[in-house]
Image 1 (cartoon, helix red, strand yellow):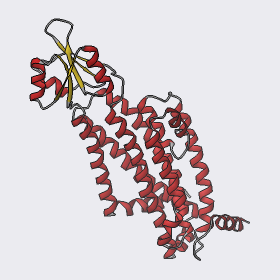
Image 2 (cartoon, helix red, strand yellow; image 1 turned 90 degrees about the horizontal axis):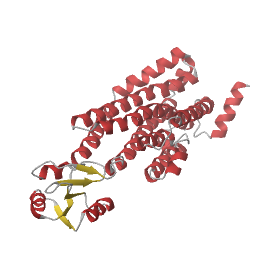
Image 3 (cartoon, rainbow, N blue to C red; image 1 turned 90 degrees about the vertical axis):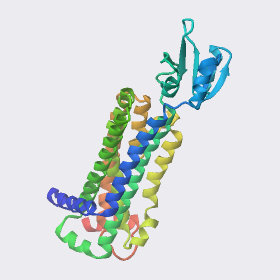
Image 4 (cartoon, rainbow, N blue to C red; image 1 turned 120 degrees about the horizontal axis):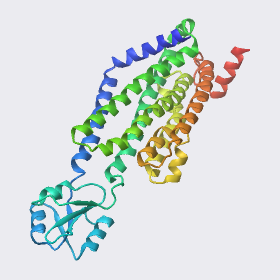
Length: 360
């Protein structure tokens, strides 16, 4: 059984790595990963609107740097403008006569510091806050990686199964390889390729961040989220891949896959949009981090934002493992019951009963 599984998995990998579409897609993912890391780092420290208490030379220097200067009557007003998001930063008098200091929310505004003749002290009003650009990009990145890889590899698995049925090659394969080994090999081979893409994306993101001078605090914050995302992705992919394999086995023509893949697409798309739109809701994210179909993205995000206890990812991963194991067992039964049926689309009930008939 294991030897046959490895044989099928090896064939899946060999076919995919020679596929130009797969290679181009991998390169595109890596370019997007690098761009989404480099561009925010380039523009994050730029400040276009600055409040100034007493304009004078400070206001003139900022104006020459191309920034919009907003006059504030005192330090309290300037600080309130920063907290409200009306300005990106503020330049206010320092503790000693003639000194100035810069107020910002969570990140040193390098553009303001560079525009001034000296480097004033910077006071961060909320140093532990997650940068707003990252608060948008990180949920989007995790969700898109899981969404697109699950969809792309899932469709390829379904197409591969259907093609084998349509050309009758499956009858030869089943005579030489156990049906469950075919299913396991397809899931294992495509899972290894998907994992390889995720690891490459993570490496490119980290290296790109370091190349543009990303701070160590941000890397330390992203590290645990990325580290946990990988095992969650692997187990979640196994769950999704088994559904796609069954989808391909239920039909006999490539044209019918889109119609039969509704349930598989739903369990991928629904968590994607829920995590994107509800990532700012702690209660909703806690619930989503324990639901198997959304846990691969929801739990790493909670770790990134610091909302999850240390024991939570372990429990959520165990729940996901249990769900994936159950889904594999059910998928294997449906796969066996529908793989050799070539007389049109097979219903789930017919596939289940076909398996019972064979066993009896």
